[in-house]
Length: 269
Image 1 (cartoon, helix red, strand yellow):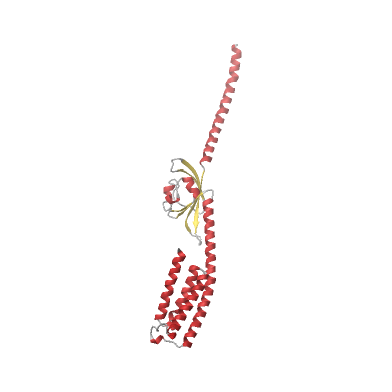
Image 2 (cartoon, rainbow, N blue to C red; image 1 turned 90 degrees about the vertical axis):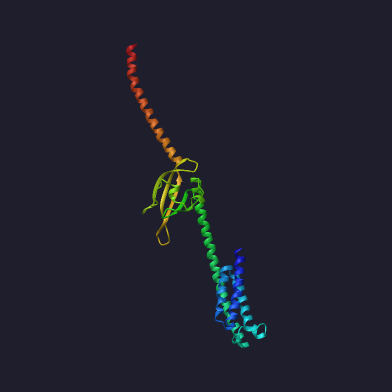
């Protein structure tokens, strides 16, 4: 759809430029450079093939504007614009050579631009796959605390979709987190979080600055994992240790009681 719209736009521009050149001096018009700009724009919009097609059209248009009044196809826009055949031929040759040179350069430029676009798309897709497939929840926020990105693992852990949290303050999602202040170094914290089902989770978080190409802080990166099972296992371990200590105390107490009771039992017998 974009290519169709771009092609329609280029056709309209070609007709406007041709009419403008015809009305402003014909082959002598100082606005003939508009064809050059149009060829470059065609190359950047639709690729190297479009550059050659634009070159051909510009050459035909200029040839028609120069030779049309001479052969009687149409009158010149003004009698002052009339040209002799050798003048028209010289103008057509010079402009055609200029159009061809620009088209060849535009083809190379378009190829480099297309390669850059493809590389940028590949890098963007790789970055998106890395962020989406990382095993930890990941979100980014501005310095004001507004959430700007939210990956799939973050959606799974919190139960909230990206559309529900993007653009909202970070404090609404994690009320116990506090202000976004990563400090000079990476900050590691553990907070309690209540998901949308009402279940309380224990999240381990790593908060660090998000810096731009100049090294200035422009936001924060928050990476978090669900540590609920680990925290529950630690609690069970501590409970088991307490029960074990109580068992040892009971065994020692029973031993201390059993010895004098055995003596008393023997004496009574």
